Figure (cartoon, rainbow, N blue to C red):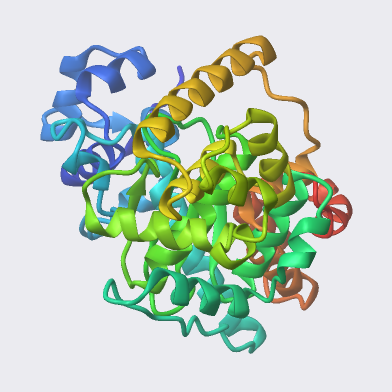
Length: 388
């Protein structure tokens, strides 16, 4: 006869784990193939559960088993302010997967702080600050200077993937942890940031096309510079902070003084026709979307609001058609590339340095990077690659 080992856990910890994961009793019962009444009985303390049943719940809630044996439920983790709720569905809650990615990013930040302490390295300071009262053009110059990217270098990049990696690496060098979230619908989140005095966070949606991610990462950097944070979809709204971040991000990526040197900009400013192939050429030159170029034309007075809106709709429809033709299945990427793409070079490199100094175990490396140890040599090589 098989002996059942009971899990002696406090019911309030079961409730906390489920609610913090953004799951209802009904949804948990479906995932666990258990009657909802049984879940409710566990959470009320009426019926004890076995270790096996607890392990199943821990997997659903994406929590380590040990957390259920804490004396009290942990404090709620920090959820970024959701700017979308100010102009979208105010009653829409964050999905369980997005809540998990927010929690995961914060856990990685805590890991990084601990790892810096273990190897005796000083945490890189993030010392940029600004306010909404500042001139966007001037702030963009400060940011480009801090990032160390000259306009000539930007023009020399051979692809948007290289551009994305160069901007991302430069931002990480400022003391920012940059991660990518997976399996999040783009209509729920394109990016979010969490402002901290040490190791602030930017999280991008890996489901997004690489060109929008370039704008998103600069947009979120501006949020951090403002000591602000939020879940953003990057669309213009009447929200002052979002407009400011969009304006600065656009100026960083396509500086006004450089744009005014473009022949097409001056031709259109003088009343000549706007040709789509010229917008596409500038898009490829600056490694940004056509909409960003179009927006820069509008802000600098070269086109009207009416033309901008018409072209924006046209470009959006064209993009959606290309995505349907392209299909939704992502291309295969080796585990080593996926790890560095999602965890970032800064965090991944820190984990490896700590491991090679024998300050953490192989099991810890595997947990921190969510990868098997056999991939470590390839992960080191992937850190220097520019195709993810």
